Length: 275
Ligand SMILES: [Zn+2]
Image 1: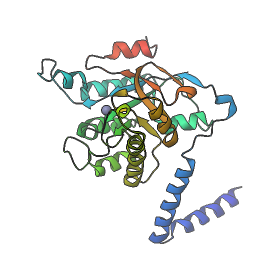
Image 2: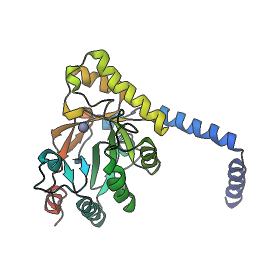
Image 3: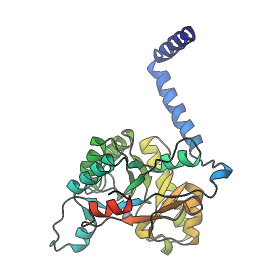
């Protein structure tokens, strides 16, 4: 056994000595494999999988005073200090932060559903997602899902750049699509819906070099046509409908828990049954 292991190590060592050209080829191959894996192969016993799995929705991760004249901005913001308190609470109480990639692996029986888990989603790709949310997640070695509006990076300084998004992806954060331009999809033609969903996925995949499997409806708006296009392009889609359960049958209408600037640890204790 020991001998065969050492032979294996030699083979691995030799493989590691290959030229940089080969490693580029290997990277391309790995990405290709990931693409092949970006389908959902749910075994029959999980067809009706349903679990308590709150998916939190955050927008800005920055401090906006409660008496700010921008009340919409205030209501969509959450302070970095409070986000850190949340992550610290998750750590202390063994609540795991999952991505939709984890969920895919759980549904395919490749990973076990943790006893307590949460999905942290961040909408719109704001610059503070890179400067605040990502840095705090990294500190706790936790994961989030970032829904990017593709027309924003490198075009609008209020949004994370493609370099920053790549860095987040390489550090284990899930990068997902929030369309090209954040329009109300129910007002669009079928061709326009297809463009918003399909093209945004393609561009993000080109930028980060890995498949995009999840999607978020701008302002939570969708109809039958939008749902159909989401199913053709993604494995999961999040809505703004309130709820805390994840169900396979409703995986294109995943409900969410809207996090308000005033949401605190007391709510987390209730949601995760922590005394
Ligand atoms: Zn949005």
